[in-house]
Length: 152
View 1 (cartoon, rainbow, N blue to C red):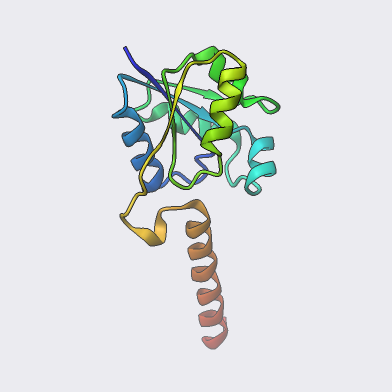
View 2 (tube, rainbow, N blue to C red):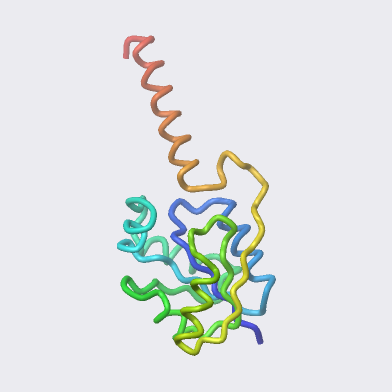
């Protein structure tokens, strides 16, 4: 039995996320997903659109996911230690430094292999949360300008 861990924010779930989770699952038999808590998302990315509990529940509902847990706000390795994965799968664009993770795992006697997954190449305009948000803003601004023209 090979347990794989995937981590992420999973804010505005999209096909890039699904691809990442599918590719991670291919590395083993069981997929555990760590969903970043709101404070971590704020620190590393942006203000989350959906709250942590909602993001966690959405990930739990995916049939490819065997287990989903909320990440620890101060120490991401505490959750990794609890899960005891064989492999940690990193998305191609995740900010995590694989070598730094390997060093930290070694310090904590966690023997997981770290694997960087390939890039998702489908639907490039909607394969990231920031891209989806930008498209929504653009559509909203376009509609506002159309409303002005039409006198609404």
